[in-house]
Image (tube, rainbow, N blue to C red; front, top):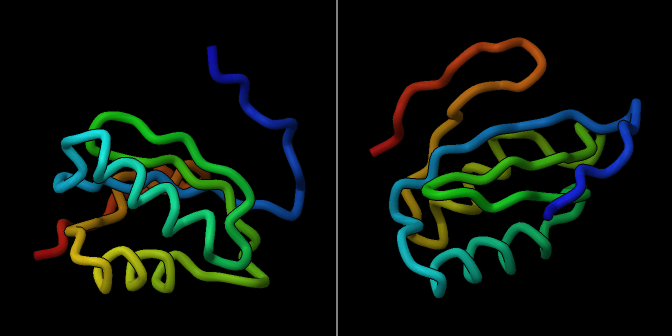
Length: 91
């Protein structure tokens, strides 16, 4: 069972919907991409989505989304874990 890392006051959380991530190969591509981004501390891949803990002083949600878009994935903010706000789907 996946165990969440201990809370870090310097990290923020981001929940993304990634509808193009339907197969294990695509999940690996997304995981490899996100692990390579500076400021991404940890992640949990779920069905058609990903939860990310990141350092907002190093990377922004817009930069994370742009990296996924550049790799060919449709991705959008599913829900900001802290504020509860939801984002609009990207095309």
